[in-house]
Image 1 (tube, one colour):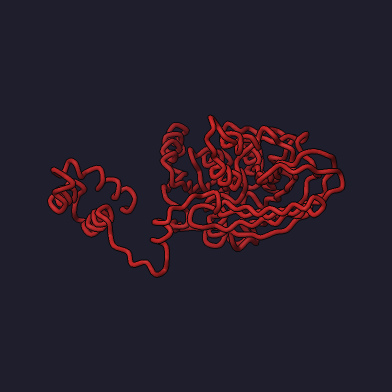
Image 2 (cartoon, helix red, strand yellow; image 1 turned 60 degrees about the vertical axis):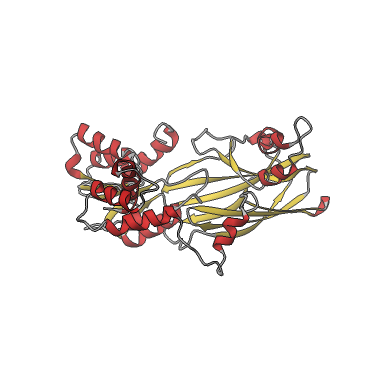
Length: 366
């Protein structure tokens, strides 16, 4: 992310225009802490660098190297679990993936805006605008379907059906576009209240060709006058574009009109995407979803049924036992010894149980 100079330079330009001497700044999802260090250079009185990943340790070392550890507080935690002693004048966040709809990006932004930003404070970025275009992209399409078109007489249609219900990062050029860019959605981070969306768009075909799917991208508006985009034909960014394939290539003529309904619903840590595509002129009607691209075993589905009566597995029992001993008194070594005694068929001694106890401690303890 840091090596992407287009993205990084744009954020730093936005910071230069918003961070003043004495500002309180949050670097949300700070990674190795570059923006936190820049904020200090720009005169921030206090910077809170928040990141759940171990990459934050690099930020701590970089702060020491730059002799500014006293002005940056590094917090290794999900931002939604963080409470600060003061509110921020500026929040800097780049939690994008290929698209703004990525993991907990939007819930984190919303929560930070509501709880951690001072009245009148500035949120960077301020909005993302998403665009879509129908594309002729045989190479990108082949990554989905070619391995499953049959090999050595083995039929793999069942795998192909799964593959075309997934989307992926791709590099799509302006030469691949069969339609003009069509406005798709705007994410105004000062107003957005939820992570999900459901939109319908029409995309008129501008030239004859073979449609393999559609591409999605976004324009990031950081502050007034500071923007960047991962649009096809623009400067190459780390994000790439999002390519959503059709189940089959579709022959099109200039003047044909695609109607596409796209919705995304955040479920846990990931989005369920659905895209329904209609091309009336060619009698095409496609219905696709990443849910269909996620093979689920009957046993897993059974365990999620509201009538299922769950019973703890041995792994669950071990976790439950360890958690019951994490009372702020017992050490990991002493808990591991107890675990070995409680589950003698699984562990010969505390040394064998230690790694499991340590993993549970890392995940659930303070």
